[in-house]
Image 1 (cartoon, rainbow, N blue to C red):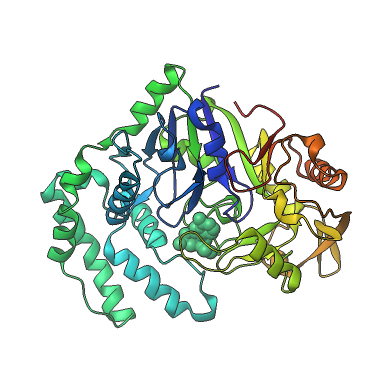
Image 2: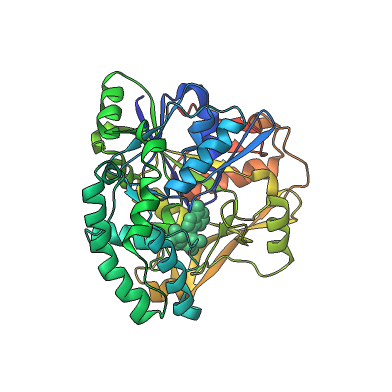
Length: 427
Ligand code: IMP
């Protein structure tokens, strides 16, 4: 069972780190294939909680080789801080591999991300302000700086000069900010050459060799399906492809290598940043979900918007990712409701939609159509088999499974590593 892709099925923060952690020692390589330090994975191991933003969550699993693939955008300062934070807590990062083709987040792109958001005013995306979008724009625009450029100072300077010609025009003329000097950027980057050198390699070659040798490679998506630049709620999305197809591009492996695509789904829905969210709650129930679920961003600390489970987006996620399995997280957070609404379709200006509307306009007008399932009151964090769950919680999972079109292989019933109900093997 060599290559497995793990993708969030909603708007992110579904608890993907828990699944990685659960696969644990069976995984030989754990790969990030897109995004940057806009992500936030919380992994709880032996009661210790680790938050990683750029490294794959497998970095904490002993024996697993963490890989930053070519599709990732890397802020070198954040990466080195994360490595020293983990090493300071006794987690060795010596086996980390970084693709020479990954792009670097230059300081001017972090500035442009923040300034652009400010200028967009009420049309802003609500980005994490980490420079992700502008760095991917540079990549596609062929103005990007790659990790390998660190090792050729002449080329590095030439590329930074080229990029700054454009950036300074934008910063000074459009945004009334100060121009950024070439030396400032080049000298800043050159400081990372020695600390990073030992990690940089052709990660595509390493991963393909590993797969040839029957090793287990876990490709871990950051953000999620509905934040995908092609398949998400554009323009309120991130600037990369978290969906399963992105794993091939961002890791340098072919589609026929992939055996399993696991979708991670929260038992309700959350979203950070701006953009449409049909089943969003603005009442005490939403506040309850936020409080009990600890729904605050790992990266930015922002309160997450909370709402009921939306089966339309989950079905859509099943389609665009071809999920073979689902892992349902945070079922325990739903304990204590008399009835649990599930959004099964949308009302768009009087027309019923059972699938994602084709246009952004229709999705912005979508009102949830709910079915109401019986709630349960018991604390389910101690349940370790499906039969241990209260009957109403069992019925909730079964109803979701029916609606989303792929089997649920596991259920999270608490934040700890062992707070899981396994239904089908993930490997
Ligand atoms: P960016 O990725 O910083 O450009 O932000 C684009 C959108 O994606 C914003 O709505 C962010 O809040 C959202 N976003 C980015 N990373 C994450 C994540 O890891 N979880 C949830 N939302 C995210």
